[in-house]
Structures are given as structure tokens and as C-alpha cells.
Length: 137
Length: 76
Image (cartoon, rainbow over all chains, first blue to last red; front, side, top):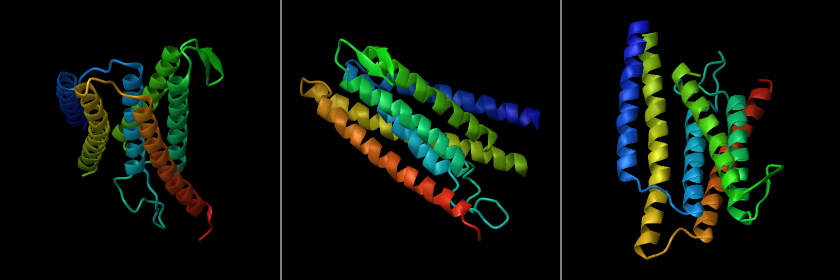
């Protein structure tokens, strides 16, 4: 069991590495502030879609999901969605903040720092979503 | 059997997440490329449109989750 799962992880890591390498080679790096914000927003939207695809919206009488591939309980999905909403709020705040700075989720910040906060918050949820998928719920 | 299902689930989730990211980021890349081709860069208006689309997506998923939670709370 352990050997088989380890092999799977190695294969997955290899595939992810290839995909990352391909992505880095073909995707032009963002330059302007708006472009950086747009890429973070794209990541947020993909995370929302992943939550949607993994959430169980209907359970059977025995408590199992009608669709066994959907391993995320709605309450957990709501919690993740709330975290993404917070990250998106920081992102929108950053994109409309004057260069001199302003409040980012209640803390004094610059647009760049607020964008970095949004990106970090989103990264935390993305990591949890990936871990959840690997654990199978 | 359980191992096979787990591996299929992991692969399915990884492929699904990867495809979501590819589609979303690919769209922004295309937008940026088009703006650069016309000698410009992504505008505040472009960003606002992306945010509006994100809001619509977030609201739609939230509504489905809230409905599922309501069903779970309703005694059968």
C-alpha cells in the first residue's frame, strides 16, 4: 500500500513538474500591477471551480454522496469559499488603492503589499484544496 | 480496490484542478497578449470585468452550497 501510494505520488510530482515547466516556458510573466492582479484573480476563479467540482451537493440516505468523486462536505466547501472571498476582497482593495497606500482588510498597507497578502491567502487555500483532494475528502 | 479508487480520485482531482487553472490563466494570458500586441497593457476596466466574472462565479457556487446545507438541515 505504502509503496504503491509513494509511486503514485512520485508520478504525480513528475507530472506536476512537467506541467509547471511547460507553464513557465509558455506563459509570459506578468508585468504591470493590473496584470499581476489579473493572474491572482484567475487563480482564485480556478480554486472556486475546483471547490464546485469537489463539493457533494446531494447525499444518499446512508450518508454517502450520490457522486462518490465529490468528497468535499458543503460546510467545508463554504469555509474554503469564505477564505477565497477574503483573498478576493484584498485583491479588489489592492487594485483600487491609491499608490500612497490605504487600508487592506483593516490594516494600513501599500497596493503591492495588499496584492501580496491576497496572493498568499489564496495560496493557503489552494494548498489545502490539493491536500484535501489527495486525502480523498 | 480502495487503493485504486483513491488513486483515481487523486488523479481526477489533480486533472480537474489543473484544467481549471489552465483555462483561467490561459484566458488572462490571451487578454494580456492581445493588449501587448496593440501596444498597451491590461486596463483597470479589463480587471473590473474579470472581478465581475469572479463575483458571478463565487455567488453561483455559494448559492449551490447554501442550498445543499439547507437540505442537510431539513429533517427527512
